[in-house]
Image 1 (cartoon, one colour):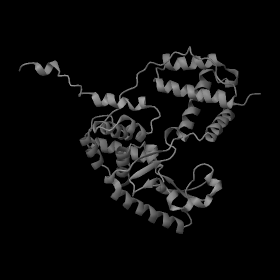
Image 2 (cartoon, helix red, strand yellow):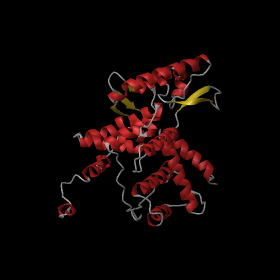
Image 3 (spheres, one colour):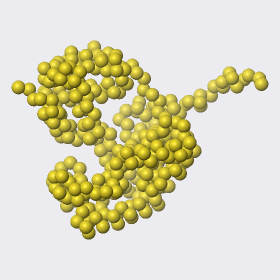
Image 4 (cartoon, one colour):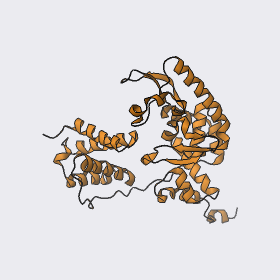
Length: 324
């Protein structure tokens, strides 16, 4: 008798964790598999074949009109399900209707808009936003930084297991060094206080939880941006402190956008888009920007050249030639 969907999803999650896929990807893939199962009347995927996969992907493109990247993600989730969990890899699915919904150009702020936005932020949120813009970090990468990932002397940030589980190095803006140093001093004082009160342990990645549990109290492994409140771990009973939740920063940035009078639909990710575009404006090579952003394919980075060229194409509007 085939496993029921809940047990199936547990196997899917175990497979993704064994492959060190990010929690965000895990949640996205599980969601797509649930949607696939519901689309086919809650039938177990073991009873379905390539034609059912094609039908679902075609439905996403033709009726839901999802972006091509969204359809590709759904296919990746189902490919993992069939190849790695059910052990029956998908065959020829070339007949899927490919989504033609175009990718939208990213929203980019001017330097003055970035300056104004940052001026309406305070403390930790301002420091995180500075790293999003000054280092090109994603919000999830910023809030999960550990103290050991920062090299203030060399001016570098080592991003561990970014999107696609890849590591990379990016710059640490000089303008943030003083504030970051003061912030780390406060984090160290808080950590010492936690240790004295019987806490001070942090969740370690992967197998380190069992292999080197003593590292959990080392300052270098603590979060750069810890949460304000502590929690008791359900499994171990230990008092721990998680990293700051991204919603805290998102709300602060949204409030700053409104306070700055910025009419663009700007979010935390807009600061990363602005980082890339402003580097290209300053004449840096596209490959350099690709590496700093952590893009696997340079074509992903190329979208910023389209933003860069808007209103800079050297063509004079005919409206400007009209006489008063």
